Length: 466
Ligand code: FRU
Image (tube, rainbow, N blue to C red; front, side, top):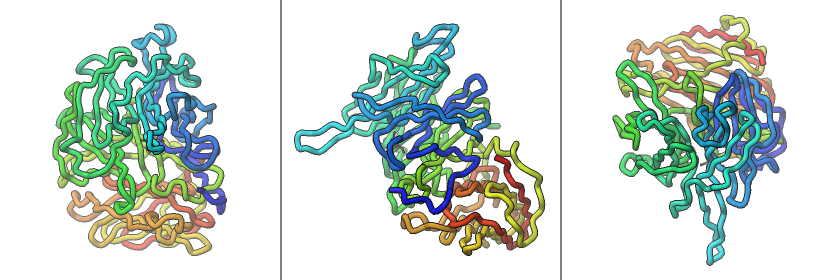
């Protein structure tokens, strides 16, 4: 349960719910100049509960307008995670050619009592449509469109366009793997394949899959993202990725067996990408599920990551890796200035670039002496140290070391360029063209107002207007 907030930890350029609880981003779609964001929402308390889809829209993915709840629980259960598409050709028949529908696909989760008195979750896939561009939805009377396969964990459908078959495609998590489906009308679904039985080298349940195609100099490649409910011993849940090919029926991975988590920080989970954007645009739930409900943010509990463009970058050591680069906030950057070794921080929301070579640290500090430190170690690892950055006693997981090798070794001379965006209570740090990045929340008693830099680096600073 969230405690009373020590102070206002609400970030300025990251999405947060007005009040109460959010987890996963859902139904991300872009149409007619508007980005829609639905999200797992519990409107009664700042903790997880019977799930609804909350709703917000934005023109720039930075400033959000809040809207009424889009989907409420019903007799088939809670409304778990899912996706949305703009059905422009009205293949579903829910709208007309002049007014095509937005179709959302989500998991209905029902707790059912067994004979022995224990409860079991039943999960099935359902759809709902909107004829007003995504503001209000009607649930399809034929729900569920994919009934339970007879095991409990079957959720988080992500709809995409299946070019090979010229129909809708969908990927959904099924315990420890992904199932693929095809449909011509979003109502009738046929299973076409499975992935993960052999490839799931990291134990854990799969959640929130996403599948999309990206261009590379070596041709098109498909990326499968899967959130993994990992144990606390591994610092909680992470997002895994696979790169490979989708043949219209199933996914085939290349290069298995590497450490394939893409966010090196702790606070990015259940992330998926937008339908309908030119750039492949990603948003994640910006907090670790293992301590999300214990953080001291008060009347709201939940945050989304900054939007990021996903691409594939060829690294000399690991081959292709997905790169995540923050977008959109740059248009609100104030004048950049070079920093001296010790300097003032003039806003609660600001961006830094750190260019240099060798060991370096950047310390953000407040008047209480709490410090958020990040930088590069002697052996070329990027790190974030929040062991004394502010409130921390809410979880043992929270202060575990956060570190990753810098692939920038590719430059062979150990030089690097880091970009950091700090926003009240969250740091997002990017290295090596976005192939290494960190999202980490902090709860300092008062704003960090002093910055200290060590090492052979040039640092620039700019406030971000909000
Ligand atoms: C991921 C998740 C999803 C599920 C939702 C329920 O955080 O567990 O798998 O649909 O949250 O809120």
